[in-house]
Image 1: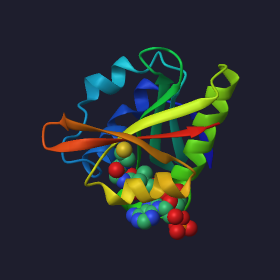
Image 2 (image 1 turned 30 degrees about the horizontal axis):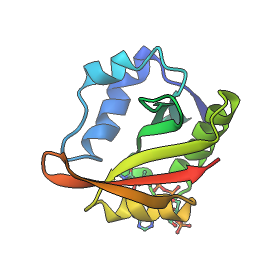
Image 3 (image 1 turned 135 degrees about the vertical axis):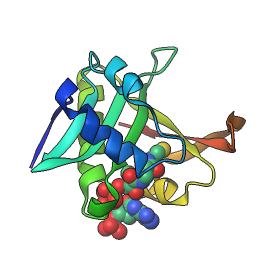
Length: 141
Ligand SMILES: CC(C)(COP(=O)(O)OP(=O)(O)OC[C@H]1O[C@@H](n2cnc3c(N)ncnc32)[C@H](O)[C@@H]1OP(=O)(O)O)[C@@H](O)C(=O)NCCC(=O)NCCS
């Protein structure tokens, strides 16, 4: 098992994970645009099982977890937790002491995952997604 920075050659496997994870998946060019971000990480075990992207918030005050997903065949094995730990360590190295994220209000699996990992609800943005509201969650790191 290895967690490492994403490479261009990983993109097709990342898109497969994306397509089985979200109703409105990111297209490959959005992932390609993140390849220069050191916070674009993959979890590899024979093949790519999950990915996470962390960057800074718009005001640069907090680390922003942009996305995290694990292939549907590999869930509940602690993969997302490990990816999140790496994102948090990376954010600390870059001087951040807080992490935030937006999650779909209806995405109870992800909300449970974040709560289980110490995130608390900080707000709600009505209509953030075309088909859902966003719950804003945060955590001191
Ligand atoms: C959310 C997601 C990333 C979790 O990945 P995962 O690798 O299965 O998560 P982990 O195995 O690390 O889970 C750690 C803990 O989080 C909680 N958790 C994870 N998935 C959960 C679920 N579906 N329901 C309830 N709790 C859950 C549990 O407490 C779990 O510990 P346990 O398995 O010992 O009970 C995964 O379900 C996923 O890819 N979903 C689709 C994409 C998505 O919604 N991403 C978030 C966008 S904001």
